Amino acid sequence: MVSIQTFFNQLCLQNNLPKKYHYIIAGGNSALVTSVEATEDDPVVGAAELKHVSESFERVLFIGITCGLSAPFVGGQLEYCLDNPEKFIPVLIGFNPVSMARQIRVPKWSEGKTFFGVASRMEKTSGALILNPIVGPEPISGSSRMKSGTATKVMLDTVFYLASTNTNAKARDVIEEFKITIEKMKNETTDIANVIQQAGDCLINHGYIRYVGSSTFGIWGMIDASECVPTYNSSYDDIRGFMTNDYFKKSLNHESADSLVSPALDQSTPDDLWKIFQDLPPSSLII
Image (tube, rainbow, N blue to C red; front, top):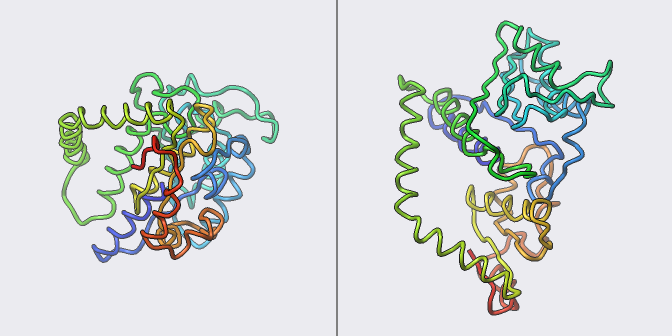
């Protein structure tokens, strides 16, 4: 969401439009670099954060993303939107039919509410929208970031591109462009497979994997690294991501970037960054 917000806000400015995009992450910005699962279970915090972020806006299109139609954090935000229809247009993105939304009562939610109840209410509310294409089983069981992530990004990129540009293109036209990317990836399958094999060999031989990047690619590396601990039970040092601090300072909402970046990396040069990797075992892999 950080990279999507940054890209499309820049696109708005290029088309002489005001910035339109703002993200909210359960657990705050620290969830970009470490798993913060408990916050997803708090609908009260979710609603409070949405209220705070939207205070200065007269009209808000809110898109809540929860792959299994289950996260109370998002459910609380959607309920807040439904209770304030004069300001909010609620949209739910997920990858289950509403009938399979979580029906377990949430302790912090008043009157024993469930995500299923909120989703059902959205189905009956004029102006509310549910986007829940069924794209098959979740790719990684237990992952908080990898579930149907590609489909989510395709939908968001398509909608936001049309909203951020003065174009007559249709949604179908934009989605067709993704086919080009997919075909290009198919042409690189050998190189991708080689990197995956090198990464596996690296860990087997007690080496470490380090992602180094900037902008969107740096964010992807950091998120992928942070996911390995809760999903694959890796150690913190097995896989880590590094990127420049200036991108965080320009892109993150609300919170300071300082808590996410080591002081040693603040204002660092490529040579400074390279020194961090000098003492890695010979079998390590830097991507």
